[in-house]
Length: 219
Image (cartoon, rainbow, N blue to C red):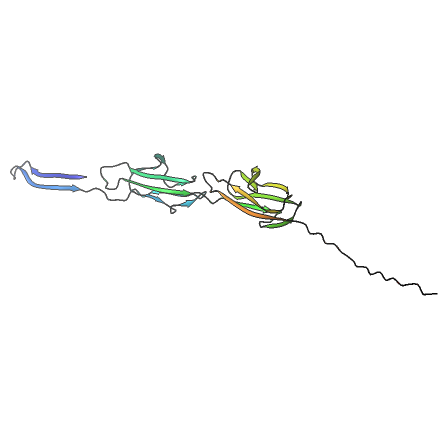
């Protein structure tokens, strides 16, 4: 890139005289305006654990980087949730107008999902006092431990699924909650249902009897 002056001259000869400035010309070399961009095959943001490709359309040698570390062109990116900086730097910085570009790509957390069951059903339940009911929490989407609560008290925790056989000794309404705290790649979630504990009604079958007293015949 630049301007270059050319001078035509002749040293003369048998039939020509010497001329040191027969003609003057200037040659201008302009910078190449070719693209040099960071490109993706997906639109940011995407949800974890989806993957994407990153590449550049530079028309000369370049270095492609993620967060400052060199990566291969057109490489698959399988990343955790977060925001990532991708940049391209052209090697020849003197002869091109477009020598650098950077773009941010976001991988969003996936939606965590937990299911709560009362006696194998994801629904509220009415039960009699002193009945035992199975309480369960199952992680449907996500990775990591979960917790199971009965009336806001932790009754079990650890790897999914969790269960607890609970005796409902008191009358009233009690909540049952499965809770997932999430992590760097999944959002948190919870699900709550209610157990309505009622007094058992005992049906009593009663039979009425009528006694008929017949006086003895008079003598």
